[in-house]
Length: 406
Length: 152
Image 1 (cartoon, each protein chain N blue to C red):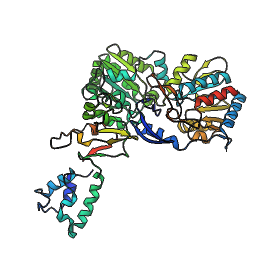
Image 2 (cartoon, chains in turn red, orange):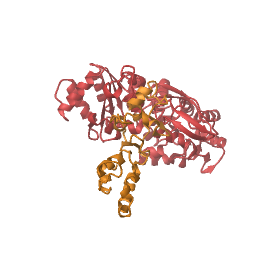
Image 3 (cartoon, rainbow over the protein chains, first blue to last red):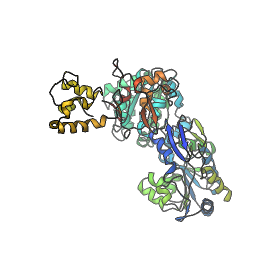
Image 4 (cartoon, helix red, strand yellow):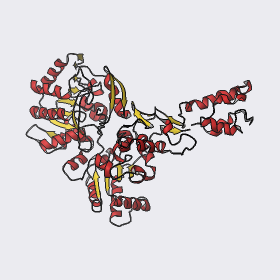
């Protein structure tokens, strides 16, 4: 059995047949995971320095040299690399007195932070499968972002206490701004809101929980939904990026709702983390510094919004990018600012970021060519072994060599 | 998806019974249920119905890959999410340690499996829609987020 590192579900029931360097047949991989496995033989990056192809050791030496000379480097990404590589990355940040940040800074950082600090209750996905009888998918579309989420853990499978699965024992609500593929499955329990309307909906839900008539939305539907939510033995809220962006800076409203629901029954929160090991980086950095992201090792340990990738770009003189493709994923203005900074990129594939980087170091695909461990979206550690040999070093090996040379 | 009425409009509408069925409408129903072939309608093969025959072959082409139970999988639309695999009552009954609890199927008797990122139909004869005592179960299609599974 192999582990899929296509998303943060880290499905560990994958069967793969290999024919030499080619993936001959796979079982149980969703289309997204299959895409990752198939990418093994397409668009692999090559070691490059200043646009010229070089040996991998030369690229590593040049990267070490640039990091040694940098006054204020930014180490960014990490969400698609193993815990072992992330540990080396934090060590490198300490050694080079760098700013370190990951994709949670512009993603679900606030919610993950509250969970790690114990401000929001959480549980594992196995608990959801076995006991989660009332689910709320909020601002997300699991069918597209985590294709096996509903079939493997949350809505469809039979659990220890839920032998009749979705047919009778489970209820799931979807709160979203658009009729997504998931909305088509949960048509009867789909609550459509306007963009940015999440806080108003929470206020209405809190009003009903306080026994008042809600001022917004269909009053009967709201009361019916809250009645169902209150009847839950174990409820779980899955906040997605939609909710995280809509409530940015007002996350106390989500906390208020969860704590109000918890006065009646038990509700947990599991954020729909996208990258396969974002949660791992947050936990590692928290264990070392007390903060999940946006940390500067310039003068001891400092933390704040000025160390987020967006702000740090204004002051850094070098960027080391590992396990992400910021030029493709960041807003255009920020991507442009990043492109102006000399970049060193570790990536298995050619991306827009590798194309604009001064030094490119190709690495092995974790989960396929390299082993390691990662934290699933619910914080459960999953270990994986490589399923084939690789000509490329892992992220961890490259970072170790850079550390040695500095 | 092609409808019975659409097929009926392309038959000769003679009710000649040469196909073994009492009416052309019954033939259209049987054709869609894959119980009859286009060639079973002999008048349709005559030159004067050439246009209708050509069009009938065209409308029937998308359902050519349907199983005996009429299941069609549009692989280009499938996400490989496995909702159908886990929701299928036969899969649940035949594979309690695998697909019933959300894992990949561990039994050979399952109907639906996900291979290479898309769903495949392995044992259509196990489907509750198969045979004369069929039940019009639709859990696999109802749980598909991309409507990649259909029944004709």
